[in-house]
Length: 295
Image 1 (cartoon, one colour):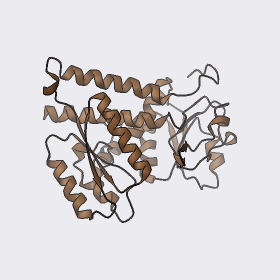
Image 2 (spheres, rainbow, N blue to C red):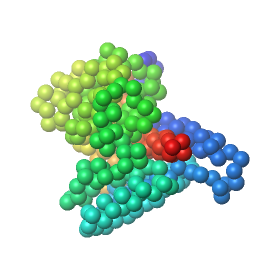
Image 3 (tube, helix red, strand yellow):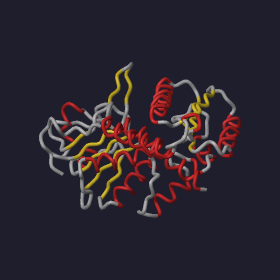
């Protein structure tokens, strides 16, 4: 990894995502080459949105809009927050059996009272585009031969490191995460590629000590300015997955303006991991579509 200067140490997630989406468009066009557009067979993504969280509605609208641009069909199932849970389970069962649906996504977080783990468990693992079904996680943790479909956020992190030609072998990574399963999953894929990983929480009283030794610092907490410049090792790669909304303003976990001065590379919020996660979601959808076509 060679850093040119502080003006060029920002990993542009939007630019990377646009390239991935361009490749998806080309592949979908190639699959349907020679057919009239009315006869095209497109990948089909079902999205279940429960409740009226503004951020969730915004994310679903964004996914629907971007999916249309790359040639992926979407079916949005909007449910009120008081929808009986058994109706959601019935909906998932219907989608599992629908042979025209390639991928299923439940927009998280869910309103209080819903069994998030149970609903994810109900999704057919072969259609689980987020790849957090227990069967898919079992595969993730049991091997380092990860296939072309892994949780989009994890794939985004790897793709961003690949974009800066970053060699993970022997590097110290620190992952700060609220979710144990997310932290463990990310640690697994990093360790499979040669990194040594520490997983910690935002309230760890030794947080500064752990982050300050990390060659790669990844934060997925959702706490504005959790990571300040004094917590970051010079020339470290800083990947910010956290999101905090204040009105219309979106911030990450990292004090971006100050940390970027000494970081080797850094991702912005917005414009970093967010666009990449959507692109990798579509890449997963395309792969699940191709698997269905072969079966």
